[in-house]
Amino acid sequence: MTVTVFIRYQLDPFKRAQFEEYSRRWLSIIPRCGGDLIGYFMPHEGTNNIAFALISFESLAAYEAYRARLRQDEEGVANFNFAEENKFILAEERTFLRKVAA
Image (tube, rainbow, N blue to C red):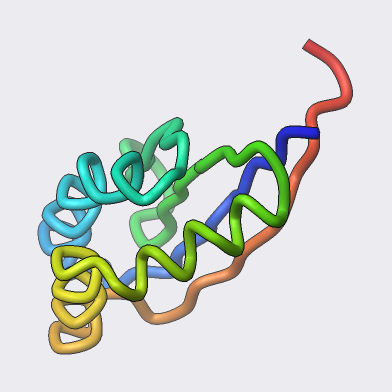
């Protein structure tokens, strides 16, 4: 069963450019570590402090293996540190979804 991780970010609205940079860095890191990156999504109109990411995995076990590889990946660790140092992500929520209809 494929599992898609839906990540909801609450951003500092004055640091959206930094979140965009952070998101672009994941484009090569996530697939290298085993995730199927569907995409990162930024506000276009309306609310200016919420962003989303969607990443799919073959199973929850595949997700756990991905997380372990991510913690060992130099670029991944550097990107997590970039977010922590610049504090543009104020909160992060993860929901694990399964597809019920196409």
